[in-house]
Length: 181
Image (tube, rainbow, N blue to C red):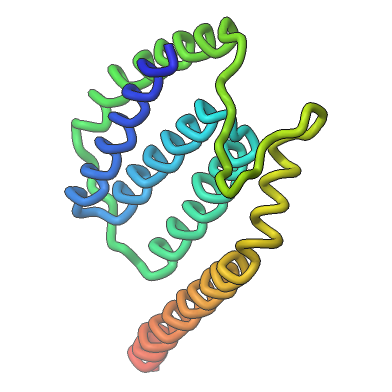
């Protein structure tokens, strides 16, 4: 059963990544990246890393993708064009998502255990110890510097996006004020 779920969500992950590269509109690319991040969260769940799966959805598929979408909108990605494809996707896509969710929730509710995560370097779960304890030991002891560098890089990216948006806004705002006078 795990092998079927692995191949299913690995396929979703690959399809989302390929669609991400083929899209011409940045919003559609961001939505494809959400598919990739959510598929990775399910793969983490299959490995038994429940905390990483939830963190993947909350941090990446939630916060970071909202930030990407906000930056794209802030930098004026252009006007949206209405297409007939969106109607077809809503007619076929919504029932397909509901059916997929029903099948997956049935499979996950009937599964006894989803496996256990392998953290490497001789770390194993003690009988009363959760994966969260091991994850925090690895993350905040062995990988503290990369963790902090990543947070600083994300902060710099946010500040750069705001600075770019402010510079673009002052250019267009100034020309509109000159035209009014």
